[in-house]
Image (cartoon, rainbow, N blue to C red; front, top):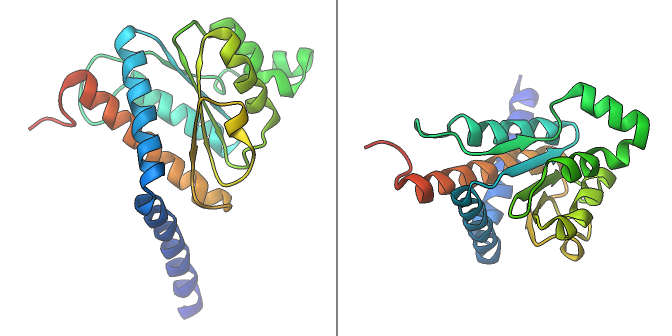
Length: 198
């Protein structure tokens, strides 16, 4: 029993340590706030936030899009958002006809409008289909935001890069949801004047 308890405590401690490193990084916090402002401004204009990722990051993309469209901390009008990893017919058609690397690119070309924001989640920083979408953003007039770990060279292709100080996939994904929740909360604050009802 002690071995299992030690394993559990070590995992929780590791997760906390990653978040503490993030909390202590003033530049990272400033980057998160800058992205939050970009999302709030896009939402104010009626533009969409478009999320995408693979595997667990696909689930995170769906989760965050739902927070925008439905609600986060309180009832309020829905905000335009979309996840590119939800439609199995679309995913299999594009994968079959164009290849998996063009999965998000093809959808972004069809769905995005100038002023939208594309948020790509990639724990490795090297997901080919997310990178292809990032590379198309400038031509489409879309602001690009990467949520990633320490890997990859996303600064060359993205307007904003939010890095989690870890190379562990679970720790990165846990922090992506934390950052995503902070982004949602900030947008609600800016759009509706408070974080939650008094």
